[in-house]
Image 1 (cartoon, rainbow, N blue to C red):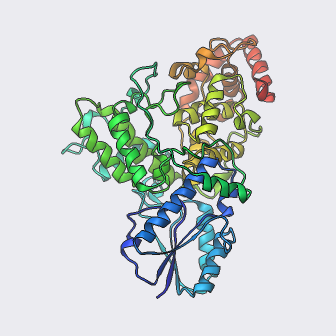
Image 2 (image 1 turned 45 degrees about the vertical axis):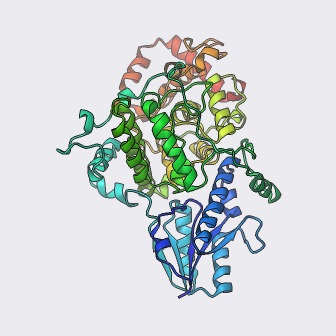
Image 3 (image 1 turned 30 degrees about the vertical axis):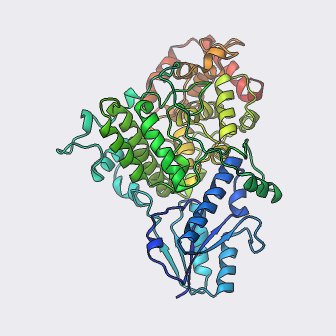
Length: 511
């Protein structure tokens, strides 16, 4: 039976059972499409990374004798739409069966389900064979529970997959979570190894995007593209992380510095989210390296890394599928301000935001604390509509696919879901930024002042947010201390904070 199998751009799983279960009548379809480049305004490095990875995956299949139909953006038969492309191929090649892997984005899931209903041939759906949980894992695990604590889910995953456990089933190192050890400020030492880059020439892909009129954001050096776009590249980045970065990853995973882009972070998220790497193999290789070097690598380093992949990544996917489609409309704090213009260029006098935004535009990258406590923190304090914040995060980061971006942004960063993901709003004054970075040292504003013209904007914004959202936060036990501190302030001080904060909120691009 002649069958057509669809491979989406984030389904580049070399070890999928499909490739051990096919024959001469099996055809694979991979396509670059305006449907995917245009649903959000993406960073150019993100689009290039996916298109390069798709091309290399198509070549890998062809080298193994597979039948491959690969539509580039400028292919004459490319309709730029997934449904019409597939319908056209079925009509042209007389396929008798259409097969696809479960997509990870709700919009594609709906589109393919509708296509299956419309086609005149049978459709079969397969798992992507990537995640360590099923789509409905959180609905099952938290059934009947009022809170969806990630820590509970993470411990469950550790037990289920027998990861970092003693023979008695207890956590290695005597505790489940070493987060308290993962909050050191980096002050120049230890030395940060060079990132594992590749210096690829992607000028043809960049030219194709320009020729086809695809609008992107951000910068790229097309002759020295450094992101992994093949399985070999991804494995090289994983090896580099284990040998060079893991020894200090946990200590400095929350640190920020104006001269360092990646610090000790792995840069594996694109390879994972495009499925060039499987989370189990990443965890296994990192743990195996740690076991061989335990005298040099503390358990807090490896546990912090495992928690991000086994815990947070799987948890966020579960939140997404549990809460969609209503989740994309959550705005429980009723924020409606526009995103400041400086998010698109980094033109702000606030040094932390300047560096975080420029880093994002230059590299399609920022690590989780830059996203959460710099760009996300300011957007929430400035009461920006979560739709606008989410569109920015979805477009600007190379690893941003909706299933992981949306719950991280709308839930963790913007508290727009009212506490489904986070136990409290992740907001802070300038003191936290000063504690975890060197940004404040060269800033035009004084992190210790609250209301003067020289005061760090985060300080007045923070207290204004607490006051403004008081009614919505009053029943949150984790906010009681801050509300109490607010109540202890004089009305004069509170008025000065309000005045300063409102100036910033109304004119953020002047600061």
